Image 1 (cartoon, rainbow, N blue to C red):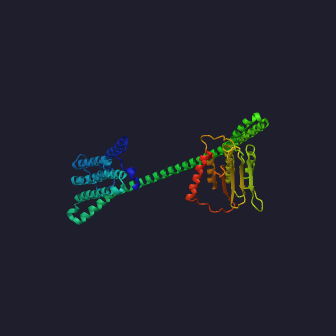
Image 2 (tube, rainbow, N blue to C red):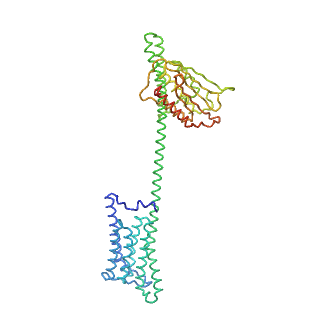
Image 3 (cartoon, rainbow, N blue to C red):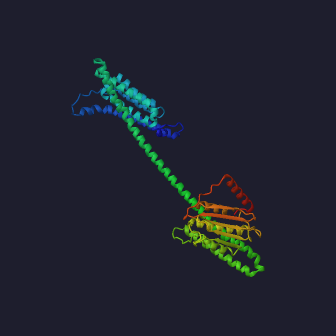
Length: 467
């Protein structure tokens, strides 16, 4: 029952309205206990007299306002008043409520037929104490209350029955037996019922807490899924915008220089700008269509084979070369054995690398190498030389391109390496495992390797700027 301790203890730091409400409740319980006990004192004699059943010995109730009746009523009033201590001293309340009947038994021996009413405040005291104090701290008071109930019942039975005068041992045994039965009814049964109610309440509270925790966990999973989807959409938008808009910006700068010196090339550049603008609008329309619920959008999934067309389109704005190293022996589709998500990551990585090369190293040759010779992996490398004309620059909030590459690579379990080359250029290398063939054990990076990668990344950001 240790789990119920925080709820059954009355903290001193509880708000004043809560404490006042508890005191009011205890006062109502105490008053109700006395009213019920007094009502039974007045109602039992006439009800017993109206009963025609004459089996058993006749009951002898004390007359109203007699000495025994008055002592018993005052004892019940004192027991009910002791219940007011339930808020501040529940153990003291329980012992006091059980001790008063011993005094009543000594002073009012003729109240034997109504003496059982003194157990009603004891029952209420047991319930109030068990609700406020853990059983591990309440058991001394329960033991004392049980002993007092046994004593009171034994004293009254012994004095009325004269058992102590006839045979002391027999009288003591009989009186204690009667007192034990009364203690079981006054202390044991109420305590058992209260503990059962508390345990059911704790189980219900635990189930509610578990359901709340499950709901919170589900909300956290939904939030994580939404965050992942937002990150995926951000990567897609960045890849689309960076690839097409960087090409548009580069071709616009070239057109601005050619419009007076080479009008024919300028017209060709304008047509390329239009094609790029149409392509970015189409890609954005497809992406928005994926987010709509009313009409599903048909959207082709980019693959490794699509890198060939990607390079062909990139040749309109810069010097891009493609080198494909196919597998030896029987021909197979480019990227065979690589999963669709990994192929999309490869396509987007090449797309971002070409956009970065056009933006940060305009005029430099760029080579895209697709190495499909190994049976366990596919390697892709995009390398460009140093810029031959001033770079167009980037936005102050740049740097999302490299981060998007790393996120895509981590998502599909690929290995990504980016950094400057010895010829002051830039290199992006991606290695993808094949699902259809067993892959080698992943390389475990040592501390020196991790430090070298960190240094390379820092040098890259410093030399090339955000990508």
